[in-house]
Length: 244
View 1 (tube, rainbow, N blue to C red):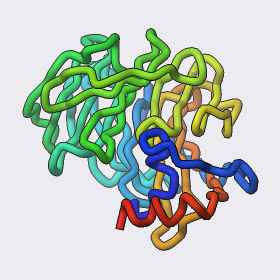
View 2: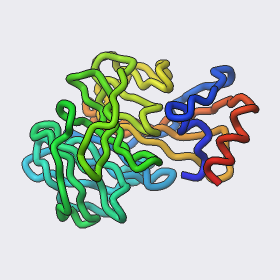
View 3: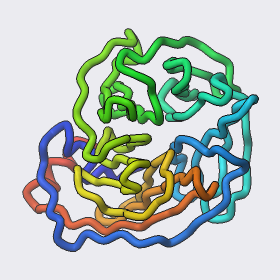
View 4: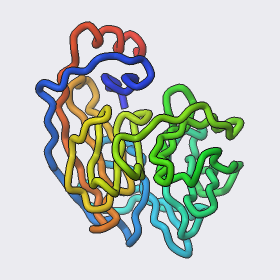
């Protein structure tokens, strides 16, 4: 994920122009099973999702074809929801039933866990500052959590009514009540039946284009949308300087 043109907007308050922004569906694929949850992009076209059930699994899939590259068991069973890389070479996993967040290895072994400090966690995203950004549907907030201590850093209101997933440190938010995907508080993708996972990647060397991946539990599919951004010139140099 080389291009981070707008990822720090929530944190740094930098400006983005809505002019020239557009999103269109470019691909879709079936998920390995029913009840798909969460998403974490590995690189363009490859990502990780989880499947809830009696035996919960995480799958590495090709989002163009639906092919499964690998899988491993994870804690949580029917309550498993979120997945995000960021624990060394492992993952963060959330369980909305037990309210736990787990650090697991790439084989699924539990290294540590803690109870989410605010409500029941849906999908989550590991941020650039080392914090977890956790969607909490019952509170309609995105919670920022310190995964080292398990403590709450802050919360902020989600733009919809029932946030189920977020990515880019809360910049993109999925809501399964409004059926919208929001970017910086504005709906950019509409009509998703039950979005339960969200991720993004960007082509190397391209500051203007990115892909947003939407996991839809109602259709058991992952949908890929391409977006084109226009960023105000004054902000662009600052952002590039931050992430060289």
